[in-house]
Length: 449
Image 1 (spheres, rainbow, N blue to C red):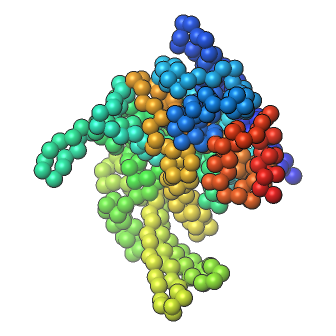
Image 2 (image 1 turned 45 degrees about the horizontal axis):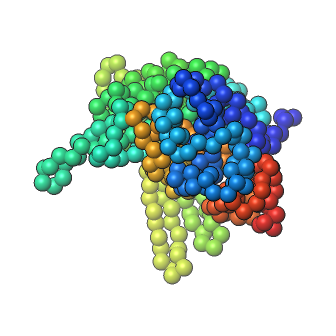
Image 3 (image 1 turned 180 degrees about the vertical axis):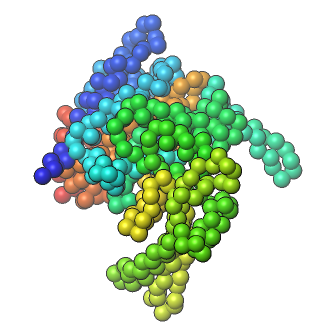
């Protein structure tokens, strides 16, 4: 019988992060505050859900108890001011954070927690879903650094405004049945990657794949991507790295949809239909019609890759409380290199739709649920903006695996909403002495009972 996942503890996660921070190269010839204290302070800002660096700095300059608590919670030797923190982090190469994510991921693997995210077995090998997409997190017309992306915006009068900003490529291991995700190390989209969204994001994705393959060579992945990636070069890249894919496609891919229609006459296109009721107070009927075909050319060109193609049409009907008939229809289409059969078409379509979890359970959570993704904690001249994003993703990583597999954390959020818990994280060091995170969790539980 398979071993149960280990109860992951926040202190163990912090120990991993602290030990990896010790290995970072300090860019300063002389330092008063150790670099790991600088890095842990940055991590603490997001772990405690502090709304700004100024708030964190004010907290550190107030009561002695608060400073002691933060030192106990984050193993800080000395606490930097907000100016010191920004100045030093701007000099640190953000690519060093990859090792931290790798060690945390290995911890999740060893604990058997990763197995909870298994999506499907192919030839008896467990496969996992990785949803990847690009997003922006900083925009300005004045503030810039050497890595800022630039874009021209035209108003209704034809006047041009130069917009500056930062984009990044983010990814998470997801499962359709879980609300939690396992974040992967984000990839910065830098100015040299390209002049448009398409080429810059795809160049960053190529780096993302190369780094992921090097760090996790044996992990079997199915990459979930949007229609931007439905092209020959990306499919070739995935095949070369022996990764499988579920990529959304739009009906602008006329050749695919035409071939699917033609297959209805030749018997090469298959249909499958499901109809299920769900809901308690109001029963809704959901009907899904699957239309699929294997070995279809992505484009008309001779060198076009062959893909497998599935289209899902969904119609949900119900009677509302006023006795009115309601109906909602949706349609989804995906390409994949996994052979589609009657037995797996539902599963594959479910996996393809899980791509939205990188938007909802990752980016939306970071932007709107306590992490302040779009707040400018500091822009700097070189690496500051990226380093704060890395710290934010690390804090998010720790919170997600705590929610999946820490019994104490799960017990707390069963009693109070996470938004209320984040307020306690932010204010906790102010109202009571804390020896450790276990002590902190225990006091929160006692306070909510």
